[in-house]
Length: 203
Length: 141
Length: 200
Image (tube, rainbow over all chains, first blue to last red; front, top):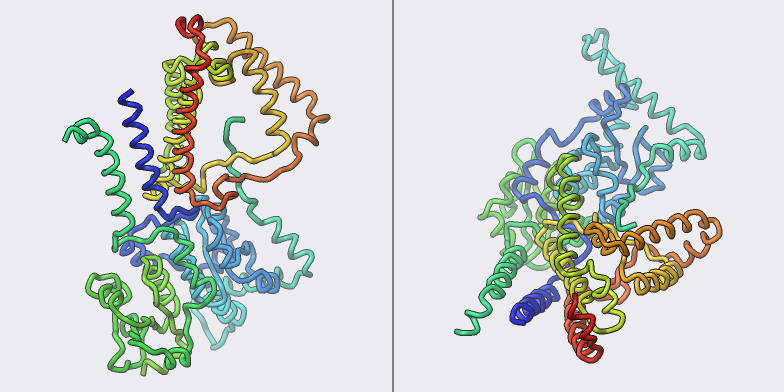
């Protein structure tokens, strides 16, 4: 008899405490602020356009490009292999679906640096260490890769390799973006993640 | 007294849980609960100000130039505070940010730095923090 | 250990081991509460024994409280917890069938397995009946498919439908539980059957 009263009292008190908490379905950052800030400011959290060009030419399957621009912009021009998650959607829905594969490096990009920086801090704050950003975004990519020009008489072997990579990546990029819309959508759809549904429950 | 003796276990468990909950709620050095809410201004872009908007703000605005030689290349005005991005979270600097009665405006030559610092500060619960983009840096000189 | 293992990487065998331990704990709790006795279980329907509602409701409330508090303290990611999907027609029809079976047999699937494991013959027959039912469901599925998938509402949560915050909803549940337990005890006194309850 006694135990029941004590237990009920404890439950009621905890319930009252809970009623005052601003609970929501959203998560919070799990990393400490100082640690998060130094992680995201570190050079190793970002990739340059040349590094991405290298991945692209090698068809490296351990990286996943994530396009944070709006879907109209993404339909017009996009990167080979990128999936499009507009930035508002990325923030407002739980990014668990896209970011949970630990072996894959997820690389955010947008038109410039701003939205990819926000997304990087947000993702790393929630605990996803396998996230990075593309420095300079699409504008840097266009400047460096697409409009790359060879000038001067002689170049070193390393410069030559760099130039070749850029040219090849540029070709892949232009090829994809010159597909007629219907084919491009189908090509991109086939590369899309399907939302991973968690199965469970007493069935 | 008899009440406490009888119900000591209930009181113990309840106080422990309440203590943890209060610590979580009021810990200044932690991120706030509900990450989506504190990231909202970045979704609408309402955290980015133009030069005109800044000129017309009343109240004590505090402009912070983030970075050393490589990211803040032009010389700054006297009332602009120059800070290393990493040192923004040091206790003294955080206090300055929190105590400022008006808006705090972050600037850096590289917009990625100001964006990153903004997100971290906003998620820590600081309101009234804004960014100004490199194209609009006339206020800095 | 889904939600917690998003913070710490558990090896596969540890997941399965924890499932085994939790299952064992569940069976132990049911057995020591007396749920392998069909008389106790049917007592809920006839009114002379309110143990079922007390045990299960308390378990639900403790789980509710615990998961909410852990979610607030950042130890649990509630977005990863599965929420059953709501098919209105199927829930009603299935509920009626299951309720009838429960009263006739005196067991529900979980407690039936519990009783079967201590050797009760009526539990063995009950489980066999359950398997027959599952087989029939699979065989007749093409005919009942439309009904089974009708009125799909998705994974709904009550507090979202009512527009309450989860914390407030939990408090209401606790108060409702206390009231229900009190009513159940009144019923126990009213419908008492000494010839049954003395033997349990």
